Length: 527
Image (tube, rainbow, N blue to C red; front, side, top):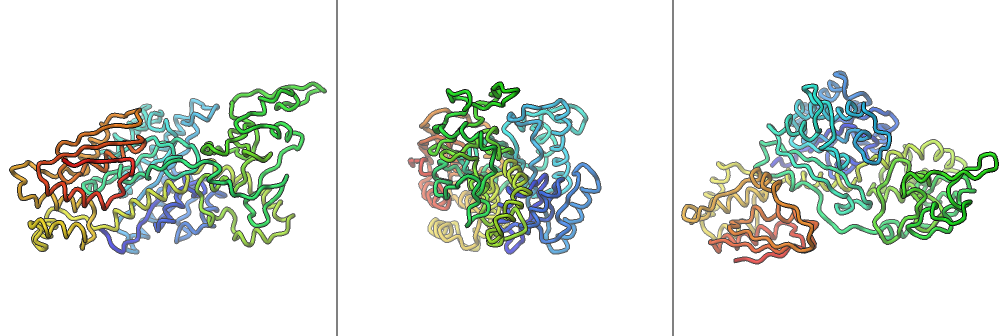
């Protein structure tokens, strides 16, 4: 589509930049990143996220001044030849939305309305793609709409943006999409309608994979003695706690909580005037030793505390180290939290290491707990890049290609699809295949574009079954099949019977499917 073009993005509410580091890994350039807290924005600077210093915008997104700074950076990149912002990412604060927040206040509806600021920026910036990531209840949560009424965020997103964008919202447990912990979130992807004929939002989501166990992810990490900082990895260390609390978790087996101890002195408590006062067990996952052979738990912001949720190592008397948390959240080892290389940090005297950890550890851990796993955005970025690096033809170009390559001949068409000399995207190849069908009028073989398929996808039913059977009675060249694969990616076995009156279509279908990553759990038969 746009060969040799620099792909760009803008990141709003970017925290320390952990999630959108995935876009940097995929070769995107950051035009502007906006974060209200300076110490978090500094982490992004350590990782050279933006080419220009002015791209780091530490300010309130609700002000015109902040928006104008973003627009100024867009203009700067236009002067460099960037025709349009490719992606706008927004991960607004979720405190009023999250089920993990026990202190939800009425004024959180106003806070949630920061989403509307993102919507307005999407309208003004007009990126090719936009992404929202937030808690599972995101689309149903109330906010103050542009007309001043309280509406569900999802209603506002569709009402304000669906005239220009094709939009899909999915609730995913990231453990099955490349992350290494159980983290159920909403991911919304919008595709500008001027390119939606060639790519649908659903095609940009990360790929379904089986979850990995905690042992798979961190089982090879060196054991740590009490208070030890690993000599070969500054970040493989943990925040100690009063040593008299150690007996609370020392004898726990995997899955047990300190509240399960029979001895009251081994249960969480405090001593008041010589009397043992038990701590209240508000959440069942506090002081709980994790399982080696289960997926890692959701990482929360206070992952430094035994008393927080699911923080106790499966074997050792400690919380997870920063490095272990990074592995769980798929944060690459080259990601820098401090303006020093790992080698420089490892070489510091022990006293200096402890002083630096005392200053930085809580900030790092909180940022990890608030982050989007890097792998999630990396996969989406790679999918967008894959689309953008291919050519996508309109009807006139397709007709010219058919004429130039004499694709009315079935043999020529098959050879063209196999070799793809013009590096065409799947939508253009399918369109060519449909238009060259010599029996088109007799067989009513019409091309179904991505926009229509995307809307049908939304209406497909959900199944809570291990095996399902699907009939596609007029498959053509298979435009629906990748969407069926995606829709039922969490079903253990999907059997699809596909039929078409034209044998040539079925041959072409097989060639097109070979160019896609068809899930091994999906089996199809041709009729």
